[in-house]
Image (cartoon, rainbow, N blue to C red; front, side, top):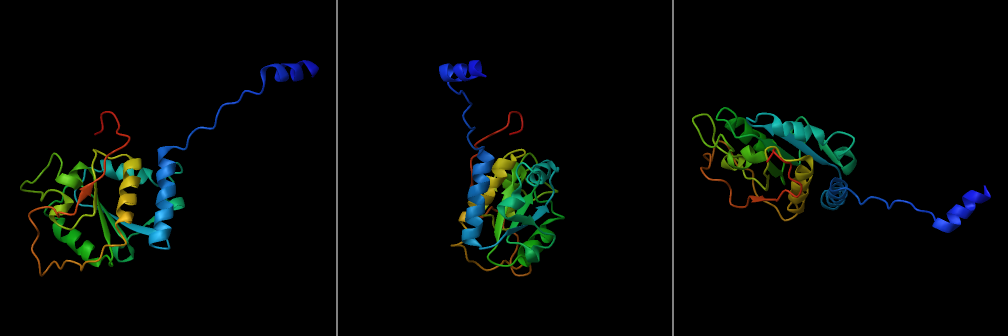
Length: 204
C-alpha cells in the first residue's frame, strides 16, 4: 500500500485528457438550440424520394441511429407533408415524380423549408436532364439549401438542416400552384450550397 502511494507521489496521477466533442455532437447541439429558438417545438421533416438510387436514403436513415440521435435534437420524420416544416428531397426529379413533388410542396404548410440532398438532388448528378429526368430539385420547386455529395455524410445532412433553419425566420412567400404556373426550366436563384467539412474518401 505504502509502495503504491509512494509511486503516486513520485510520478503523479497521469490521466488522459477528455476527448474533444465530435463534430456531429456539436452540430446536433447547435441544431437543437436553433430549432427551439426558431420554432419553439420539434422540427418535422417529410422525406421525398424523387428518383434517387437510395444511397442518400441510407445516410438519412443513419441520422436515426443512437449515434446521431436526431430525435434527441428535436427532429422528427412524418408521413404527411401537411404535418411537415421541411421537405428533404433526394434524387434527380423523374418526369413521373414532378407533379407529385409539386403537390407535396403545395401541401406543406407555410413557412416551409426545402433541402435538396445529394449531387442528384442539387444538379441532377450523373443523370442530369434527360428524356426521363428534369434535373435537380430546383427545377421543380424552390430550394433553400443544397447539400452536395454522393452521398452526403450524416454530418453534412445535419449541417444542411441547420443552415435551412437559420433561414426560416425571414422567409415568407406564397406556395406555388401546380395549375397556375409551369415547371421552371432553371433552378431557383436563392439556392445555396454548404461545403462538406468531413468528406469521405471515394464517396464524393
